[in-house]
Length: 74
View 1 (tube, rainbow, N blue to C red):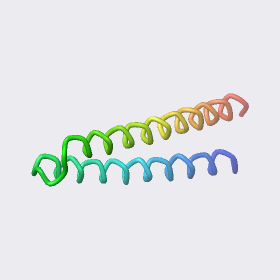
View 2: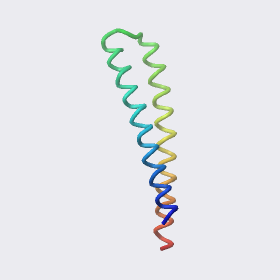
View 3: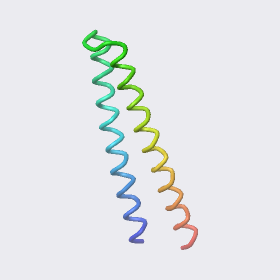
View 4: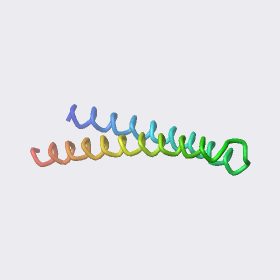
């Protein structure tokens, strides 16, 4: 069960990181709508955001699969 706890903690950490990226993206989106940053700058931020979020999603899916495997063993 220690492994499951560690995996759950890692998933929580990844979700909090994803939330920070989302918050930053929303701030940039608001700046873009207020014309404080250019379209080009906003698109750059958007691509970086999407790349980071996709990597985090993949990591979370792998960890959830590990939890599923641990449950099958018990």
